[in-house]
Length: 186
Ligand SMILES: *[C@@H]1O[C@H](CO)[C@@H](O)[C@H](O)[C@H]1NC(C)=O
Ligand SMILES: *[C@@H]1O[C@H](CO)[C@@H](O)[C@H](O)[C@H]1NC(C)=O
View 1 (cartoon, rainbow, N blue to C red):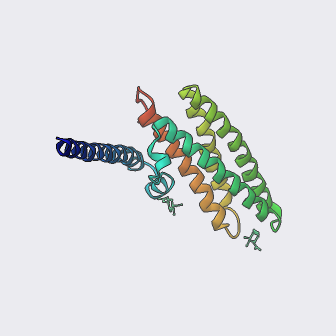
View 2: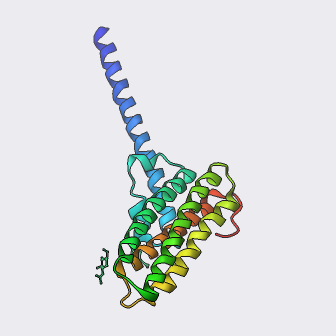
């Protein structure tokens, strides 16, 4: 009797373990599916998969959480880029210096709009979220047009500016294709 009970408990434990691990696997699959559904849209695929690497932290997030994650990532990346632009300012003069100063100002504004984006995301104000992220998209287009006039074009800054542009696009895709219930723009 005692022997059977022990066997039964053991079997129950094995079953539970199987259930728990397949549930964990299932959750991971859902998370991977989410990331894949975002990164296979009209975004820079490699950059998207690089930012949304399926870590335990990311796997837990819903689409709003993922949007917040990318906005925070974008802010850190923009801060780094701003610092780098300032370093370049030290050895640049004339029209090229004006270009760098303009881009620096735009990145600074972007950081302000990213903070606002986090606030309106938290209050589910999606129209304003689109607007706030749209600022960065427009700023990077402007900065791009200016950077390509520099001689020589600072490739490091050019790439970082493109990355910032691509990151804002990823946020907009998460918003328009996955968060919003009415999908007009996706
Ligand atoms: C996507 O982003 C990566 C990483 O910055 C970059 O190397 C690549 O050129 C980008 N691809 C396109 C199509 O812009
Ligand atoms: C200007 O400064 C930046 C940042 O310190 C550096 O990466 C770049 O190579 C410098 N350019 C020239 C022409 O010295």
